[in-house]
Image 1: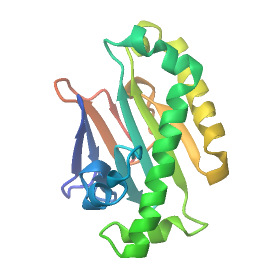
Image 2: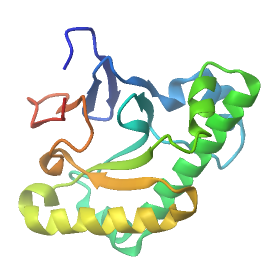
Image 3: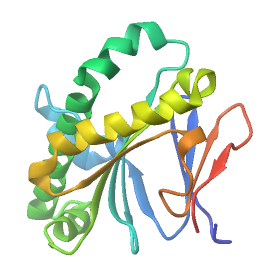
Image 4: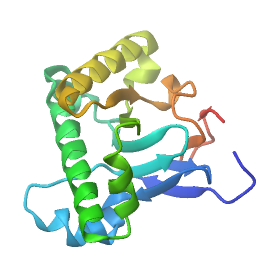
Length: 190
Protein backbone atom coordinates (compact mmCIF):
# COMPACT_ATOMS: atom_id res chain seq x y z
CA UNK A 1 0.00 0.00 0.00
CA UNK A 2 1.06 3.53 -0.71
CA UNK A 3 2.01 5.97 2.03
CA UNK A 4 -0.94 8.16 1.04
CA UNK A 5 -4.19 7.70 2.91
CA UNK A 6 -6.27 4.72 1.87
CA UNK A 7 -10.01 4.86 1.29
CA UNK A 8 -11.54 2.86 4.14
CA UNK A 9 -14.98 1.39 3.52
CA UNK A 10 -16.80 -0.85 5.98
CA UNK A 11 -19.51 -3.35 5.17
CA UNK A 12 -20.92 -5.36 8.04
CA UNK A 13 -18.01 -6.80 10.00
CA UNK A 14 -15.45 -6.31 7.23
CA UNK A 15 -13.19 -3.36 6.51
CA UNK A 16 -11.92 -2.74 2.97
CA UNK A 17 -8.85 -0.50 2.70
CA UNK A 18 -8.36 0.62 -0.90
CA UNK A 19 -4.94 2.03 -1.78
CA UNK A 20 -4.99 5.62 -3.10
CA UNK A 21 -4.58 4.18 -6.62
CA UNK A 22 -8.26 3.25 -6.27
CA UNK A 23 -11.14 5.65 -6.59
CA UNK A 24 -13.64 3.69 -4.49
CA UNK A 25 -17.04 4.55 -3.01
CA UNK A 26 -19.66 2.83 -0.93
CA UNK A 27 -22.21 2.88 -3.72
CA UNK A 28 -25.44 3.14 -1.70
CA UNK A 29 -23.97 6.12 0.22
CA UNK A 30 -23.64 8.18 -2.96
CA UNK A 31 -26.18 10.80 -3.99
CA UNK A 32 -26.20 9.21 -7.44
CA UNK A 33 -27.55 6.02 -5.91
CA UNK A 34 -29.93 7.61 -3.39
CA UNK A 35 -31.45 10.17 -5.78
CA UNK A 36 -31.22 8.03 -8.87
CA UNK A 37 -31.58 4.28 -9.01
CA UNK A 38 -32.45 4.12 -5.29
CA UNK A 39 -35.77 5.81 -6.04
CA UNK A 40 -36.87 3.00 -8.37
CA UNK A 41 -38.54 0.21 -6.41
CA UNK A 42 -36.79 -3.10 -6.83
CA UNK A 43 -33.46 -1.62 -7.95
CA UNK A 44 -30.40 -2.58 -5.95
CA UNK A 45 -26.74 -1.87 -6.35
CA UNK A 46 -23.45 -3.47 -5.42
CA UNK A 47 -21.93 -2.48 -2.09
CA UNK A 48 -18.83 -0.80 -3.57
CA UNK A 49 -17.77 0.65 -6.89
CA UNK A 50 -14.12 1.30 -7.59
CA UNK A 51 -11.83 2.30 -10.41
CA UNK A 52 -8.15 1.34 -10.53
CA UNK A 53 -5.80 2.40 -13.36
CA UNK A 54 -4.52 -1.15 -13.85
CA UNK A 55 -7.40 -3.33 -12.61
CA UNK A 56 -10.29 -1.47 -14.22
CA UNK A 57 -13.81 -0.98 -12.90
CA UNK A 58 -14.76 -3.03 -9.84
CA UNK A 59 -18.32 -3.78 -8.75
CA UNK A 60 -17.99 -5.44 -5.35
CA UNK A 61 -20.82 -7.14 -3.46
CA UNK A 62 -20.15 -8.28 0.12
CA UNK A 63 -21.94 -11.14 1.87
CA UNK A 64 -21.11 -12.45 5.32
CA UNK A 65 -22.78 -15.79 6.00
CA UNK A 66 -20.70 -16.63 9.07
CA UNK A 67 -23.05 -17.96 11.73
CA UNK A 68 -25.81 -18.27 9.09
CA UNK A 69 -24.58 -21.21 7.03
CA UNK A 70 -27.73 -23.31 7.24
CA UNK A 71 -30.21 -20.60 6.24
CA UNK A 72 -28.01 -19.51 3.30
CA UNK A 73 -27.06 -22.96 2.05
CA UNK A 74 -29.89 -23.14 -0.48
CA UNK A 75 -29.07 -19.65 -1.83
CA UNK A 76 -25.53 -20.83 -2.52
CA UNK A 77 -26.41 -24.20 -4.05
CA UNK A 78 -29.41 -23.13 -6.14
CA UNK A 79 -27.70 -20.25 -7.94
CA UNK A 80 -30.07 -17.76 -6.29
CA UNK A 81 -27.12 -15.78 -4.89
CA UNK A 82 -25.49 -15.53 -8.34
CA UNK A 83 -28.75 -14.15 -9.77
CA UNK A 84 -29.03 -11.63 -6.91
CA UNK A 85 -25.48 -10.36 -7.45
CA UNK A 86 -25.90 -10.30 -11.24
CA UNK A 87 -29.01 -8.14 -10.86
CA UNK A 88 -27.16 -5.76 -8.53
CA UNK A 89 -24.30 -5.49 -11.05
CA UNK A 90 -26.77 -4.85 -13.88
CA UNK A 91 -28.53 -2.10 -11.93
CA UNK A 92 -25.23 -0.52 -10.85
CA UNK A 93 -23.95 -0.42 -14.44
CA UNK A 94 -27.20 1.18 -15.59
CA UNK A 95 -26.92 3.78 -12.81
CA UNK A 96 -23.32 4.60 -13.73
CA UNK A 97 -24.30 5.15 -17.35
CA UNK A 98 -27.20 7.30 -16.13
CA UNK A 99 -24.79 9.30 -13.96
CA UNK A 100 -22.65 9.98 -17.03
CA UNK A 101 -25.69 11.21 -18.96
CA UNK A 102 -26.66 13.58 -16.14
CA UNK A 103 -23.11 14.68 -15.22
CA UNK A 104 -23.42 13.42 -11.65
CA UNK A 105 -20.30 13.02 -9.45
CA UNK A 106 -19.81 9.42 -10.61
CA UNK A 107 -20.14 10.49 -14.27
CA UNK A 108 -16.51 9.73 -15.11
CA UNK A 109 -17.07 6.12 -14.02
CA UNK A 110 -20.00 5.87 -16.42
CA UNK A 111 -17.99 7.48 -19.21
CA UNK A 112 -15.14 5.03 -18.63
CA UNK A 113 -17.58 2.11 -18.48
CA UNK A 114 -18.58 2.76 -22.08
CA UNK A 115 -14.99 2.38 -23.27
CA UNK A 116 -14.53 -1.09 -24.74
CA UNK A 117 -11.00 -1.35 -23.40
CA UNK A 118 -11.95 -0.85 -19.72
CA UNK A 119 -11.91 -4.18 -17.89
CA UNK A 120 -15.02 -4.56 -15.73
CA UNK A 121 -14.95 -7.00 -12.84
CA UNK A 122 -17.85 -8.13 -10.71
CA UNK A 123 -16.64 -9.58 -7.43
CA UNK A 124 -18.71 -11.40 -4.85
CA UNK A 125 -16.84 -11.16 -1.56
CA UNK A 126 -18.35 -13.86 0.60
CA UNK A 127 -17.39 -14.98 4.08
CA UNK A 128 -18.62 -18.30 5.44
CA UNK A 129 -17.86 -20.65 8.31
CA UNK A 130 -17.26 -23.22 5.59
CA UNK A 131 -14.00 -21.43 4.67
CA UNK A 132 -12.55 -22.52 8.01
CA UNK A 133 -14.42 -25.79 8.46
CA UNK A 134 -13.56 -27.26 5.03
CA UNK A 135 -11.25 -24.93 3.05
CA UNK A 136 -10.96 -27.25 0.05
CA UNK A 137 -14.75 -27.60 -0.36
CA UNK A 138 -15.13 -23.85 0.14
CA UNK A 139 -12.56 -23.12 -2.57
CA UNK A 140 -14.56 -25.35 -4.93
CA UNK A 141 -17.79 -23.57 -3.94
CA UNK A 142 -16.18 -20.22 -4.75
CA UNK A 143 -15.23 -21.57 -8.16
CA UNK A 144 -18.81 -22.70 -8.80
CA UNK A 145 -20.14 -19.31 -7.66
CA UNK A 146 -17.70 -17.54 -9.99
CA UNK A 147 -18.87 -19.68 -12.92
CA UNK A 148 -22.57 -19.12 -12.13
CA UNK A 149 -22.05 -15.38 -11.87
CA UNK A 150 -19.99 -15.28 -15.06
CA UNK A 151 -22.76 -17.17 -16.87
CA UNK A 152 -25.44 -14.74 -15.69
CA UNK A 153 -23.40 -11.69 -16.77
CA UNK A 154 -21.88 -13.10 -19.97
CA UNK A 155 -23.90 -10.62 -22.04
CA UNK A 156 -22.11 -7.70 -20.33
CA UNK A 157 -18.61 -8.99 -21.14
CA UNK A 158 -17.40 -8.67 -17.56
CA UNK A 159 -15.08 -10.89 -15.56
CA UNK A 160 -16.64 -12.41 -12.42
CA UNK A 161 -15.00 -13.71 -9.30
CA UNK A 162 -16.11 -15.06 -5.93
CA UNK A 163 -13.54 -14.69 -3.13
CA UNK A 164 -13.17 -14.66 0.63
CA UNK A 165 -10.38 -13.58 2.95
CA UNK A 166 -8.90 -17.07 3.26
CA UNK A 167 -9.01 -17.67 -0.49
CA UNK A 168 -8.08 -14.15 -1.64
CA UNK A 169 -4.46 -14.58 -2.78
CA UNK A 170 -3.86 -11.17 -4.36
CA UNK A 171 -6.73 -11.31 -6.84
CA UNK A 172 -7.58 -7.62 -6.39
CA UNK A 173 -4.53 -5.35 -6.31
CA UNK A 174 -3.96 -2.66 -3.69
CA UNK A 175 -6.74 -3.86 -1.39
CA UNK A 176 -6.48 -4.99 2.21
CA UNK A 177 -9.49 -6.62 3.85
CA UNK A 178 -9.72 -7.14 7.59
CA UNK A 179 -12.33 -8.03 10.13
CA UNK A 180 -13.40 -5.06 12.21
CA UNK A 181 -12.54 -6.93 15.38
CA UNK A 182 -9.70 -9.13 14.16
CA UNK A 183 -6.27 -8.67 12.55
CA UNK A 184 -5.82 -8.87 8.79
CA UNK A 185 -5.81 -12.34 7.32
CA UNK A 186 -4.83 -11.28 3.83
CA UNK A 187 -3.25 -8.45 1.91
CA UNK A 188 -4.02 -7.94 -1.74
CA UNK A 189 -1.37 -7.31 -4.43
CA UNK A 190 0.54 -4.17 -4.82
